[in-house]
Length: 66
Image (cartoon, rainbow, N blue to C red; front, side, top):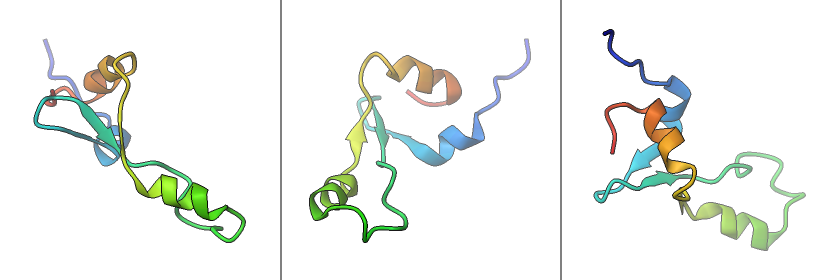
């Protein structure tokens, strides 16, 4: 059976914690920030942990992780 290929877009967006959970950075924080509220921009600075429901999908895209 051939090796699983890593999804390139996923390897740029997701990282794994030491426990195997999936970390990500939030979007909509690159440009046109003047139209966004300060609260919104502050919340977008923080990363996030993927929900347990969506985690298996990301782990399939990154076969080496987890």
